[in-house]
Image (cartoon, rainbow, N blue to C red; front, side, top):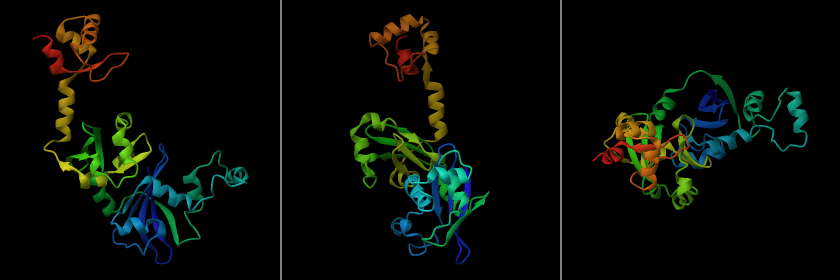
Length: 265
């Protein structure tokens, strides 16, 4: 991760932090919550007016694109060659211009540390998120809080209704950069702060969940050992619906230990 201060050249104040995740090529912006919607680029004003200071990757990328040469420019190949770039690279182009733009007085400067307000906010980032039953999410946050959030409570998220209608899309739920968001099919994002805000507290810790996984889920080899049978016998039990895998794979399945033990009874 690279960290950049977003500095207002007019008064030499830091208005926010730009985060760049190199492997994923994702941008995220953290704005100083001491600012109001009149102190920031117009792009962020509607969000700040709603009290949103952690800017998701879509709007963050839009801000970056406002400040660099567009990829569709007619002479882009010669521009890249002039700057010794092998391919179009938003972050490299942003660094070359220091993030300056004719629309405002902001520029970026590399830094090695995060301000206190960003560190405090990141406590509400996710460490894990699991697609649960009935279109709900089990969310584990960096501050140790565990919450269960219903997708129906996220009606402000664009296309969340599509996720609720499509089980395959729902099951694609994945943790985003640094736990700032979850994403469905890497295209529909839900910010962690919203999941924290909308979720209901669950009396569970992440360690509890990991402990359950460790001691209550067994693979094919473990199951054969418990039942003192061969893989062929186990496969036959599955075929006869005496045992249902949690997850199937050509190299072996995963089962709930309690379901395997029932076959001994």
